Length: 294
Picture (tube, rainbow, N blue to C red):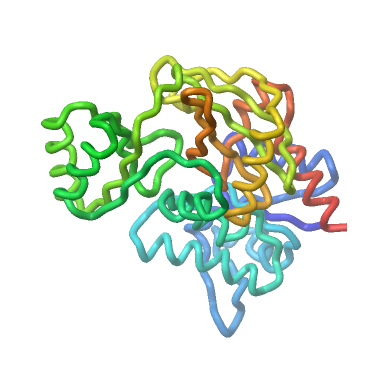
């Protein structure tokens, strides 16, 4: 099997993935997706990533692991996802596929897919109008989490509990042309659950214990190994399937004794999971891909 990683050279998860692949006899160069040059019609898989020895690696790859799709202008992001779509059209196995990445990064779309499957999600309101956002603030109990529609690792999330603060926050977002994505705040003892799903099975899970209401490992939460019950594991597997992901990090809150699905991460980190459980999700992902690749 020949593999390529689209990510950040030297990035923690890129290196972990390369090490897991190398241990199984697969050399996987890393290319930055925003350095690729396409030539549709002539050589659709040609790349320009520094004019080095890896320039033809995408054309020769059987599997493309996606570890980073950097942000940018709308055109830049669409083009980067178009690259992934064209790799799929060329017969490459892209992990995760671009449709799953698009669904996972878009909180509104992902939540709609989860709700369609009958999975429990928080009360949520999405709008472009300030007046509707203020009405939603009251509707959701005057205690909400305002999230960016596209975002990760808890960046840009704010808890709003005061009507005057809500007004100022919403007016500021209006100036930037943002969409208002509001969710009811649910008491959760500064904890949530991350489940890691690969190939339709839960590989491992951890309880993330934060020092604030944000429970992301990236902002200082501590992971503690957890054995999920059948209901929780089933929810996670169904959530990953709902967005079409080969693998995913599924986040669940426990509030009032009930589960609520928060997000499905389709380019999930796993370093914190390994520290908490001793399980290397990157190595497990490589084994899954190798097994399916024959």
